[in-house]
Amino acid sequence: MENAFDVLRARGFVQQVTHPDVLRQRLGSECLTFYIGYDPTARSLHVGSLLTIMAMATMQRAGHRPLVIVGGGTAMVGDPSGRTEMRQMLSQETIAQNVQALRGQLQRYLSFEGDNGAIIVNNADWLAELKYIDFLRDIGRHFSVNRMLTFEAYKQRLETGLSFLEFNYQLLQAYDFLVLFQRYGCVLQIGGDDQWGNMVAGVDLIRRVADGEAFVMTFPLLATASGQKMGKTAAGAIWLDAELTSPYEFYQFWINVDDRDVQRFLKYYTFLPLEEIARLSALQGAELRQTKEVLAFEVTKLTHGEDEARQARDAAHALFEGIGEFAGMPETTIPQVRLGAGVAVIDLLVETGLAASKSAARRLIQQGGASLNGTRLAHLEAVVTSADLHDGALLLRAGKKHYHRVVVQ
Image (cartoon, rainbow, N blue to C red):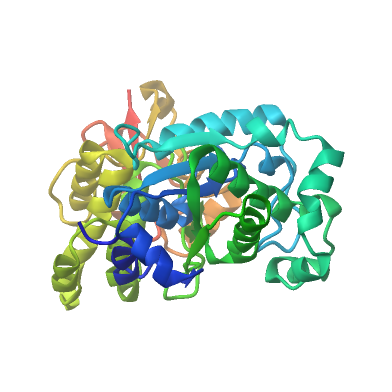
């Protein structure tokens, strides 16, 4: 089997590594236990998190064992990395609910069976029990404030105000690495490049406290070719939870990526062989749509299952090519009786989420960006009745790519 280090580097994952030659040798000769952490600040992970999830899955396929820390403890402090202001503090009850939700999501990508089966742990299990004086004496003495202030995460926040609570975050993350090293033999931490300072602090702590050897590998902070943060759209984040972002909307996100991003996204977000990715990426013009369909189908299949991916693909074909099924499209159901007196299209645009408010819906219609059953809406007073139904449903569109089906019962 290929060396996991070589696979990740060939696919563009590797940004910075401590002692790369030694780590590569060990990844090629033994089963290493590695970890990554996710703070449960929301009930779902999003596309921005998917790069690190795919890196984990790639390493597990190469024979290594993933540990996933769901940061129930560190979420109560807040990571200052990449932030210009302090994160909102969450209650323990909210954190616990989010932890359970994230556990279920990660199980879609990782295997929890076998000798290298993934393990999910909550760092609240050891952080919540810490005694402050003991922690300062045993762990805090190994950290230099002067050195901590040289890291970019802290330098940025000093301009707007860095709380003492957040200043402790690096100590806690480094302590996580030490605990995992001692309890599970974990020797590698992976994560986004904005975590470099926190991660290297863990390597140093393991050397000082346990006289052990550990490593860090970071991945690029991904932005689209247009400069937008990965996973962010005008409508908000693209979530991995089907209730927050439907499989159809998830599929459409990948169909609509910038042409310049297709090749690297195939490397990051699918397990297709590099030779196949090179072939697909060589397609030009109208044929590039086929490549995007492969990307969208493969990522949606990993995230939501093959059935949902097929339904999303069929729904897209039904809309844009007049073939296939509508099953994967976002739907809203309204009672037949509502159509008796007629329903204002402006109200439907808001109810379906195609417009954020009635004023936004009015602007959408005035700008020619709304349609009903394929016909552009030209009047703000437009009203829908039973006469507008096609096979018991209405098809609304906002802009060029956002569709919603209103089913009448």
